[in-house]
Amino acid sequence: MTQTSHKEALGSARRHEPPKRSRPMSIEEYRTLVADECHRRVNGGRRNKYHAERTGGHASRKEHARAGELRLMQRAGIISGLREQVPFVLIPAQRDREGTLLERMCRYIADFVYTDGEGRTVVEDTKGVRTDEYVIKRKLMLHVHGIRIREI
Image (cartoon, rainbow, N blue to C red; front, side, top):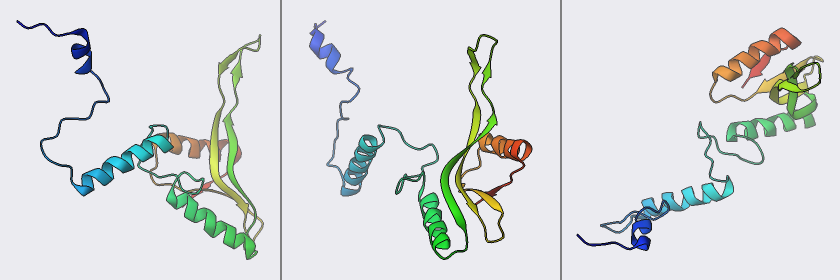
């Protein structure tokens, strides 16, 4: 039986050691590796669960495109008062008699809020995936504030 040094034993257990390759990496594999590494650096190692990519300060390309459309509509006078990332409190924070926080507030953050040409307030959300959490918050928005969310 051969003895292994402490350093050799630790070296094989390192997490960030690249895998041993029996063949050269293809250009496609290299591009994927570089793109993944860049994504990790930019997003702190987090990937979006639904593969949406942040674009122009927005949560997804779809939201970014809609923001551009709404800005053009506002310049044309079709809508007014455009606001982005507007919070709505659905359930206020719960505190005991001494003021200690028991439960944090529950809120919905609308992607866009604006006034249409007929003077109605419109709350919009650009959806790629309707999660269970979103569906509950949409129902609470209708129940608590009487607002129907327009999904794009």
